[in-house]
Image (cartoon, rainbow, N blue to C red; front, top):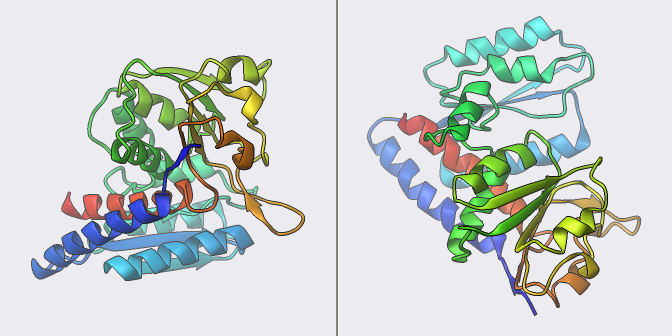
Length: 279
């Protein structure tokens, strides 16, 4: 039976440490402040934004919310970002995705100052990650790396398979793992027979949004399984991309859904806000 990687309790520990850092900054007259921009009224985005607000309150980070009409133009959105870039009281800027289809999300992300890019999405920060420089790392990959560290899972020379190549998780995660000397394979929607790759993997990380996609037959005994997926079944139950009940009997470590990677993503966002404030 696998050891459950408890993202919830690890995230709590990180938030407690950040609260101490936040108080020290405030004692020096510095107030960490996060600006969150949300365009339209996507229900999932509302939940994520609410959770970020709650985490800021707990740590003591000032939270400013900019709720914009879904009819907003690209120029208006970029102008707001520029205004926040120039506001010395704002330390971090977060643009909640998805955006309405008429807006160019890449252009919007690129408008964010790399010094305030707490999501780690600007080309400058992604470039720094690629060459191994200190930078803001995308929050979900950063949370996953923190889990490996906490549970003493050595990545050196390990065969790691990532399923999913998104700009938010898969792609930055490749670089994080390479920086820790892992051997990385990435599978995606065009990969033929994903199971042929996962069966040989020491570690499998999956982020594709397909309920229970990774089955026990697709992994080897003792593999480490990191499940980034969040899916709602017809009965309302939340499950990951991994068939947890069966896979946990074969894996050595596994993250649950919920309570695994999700809480770590928000904890690492808070970490990045404090880091930006220190800059």
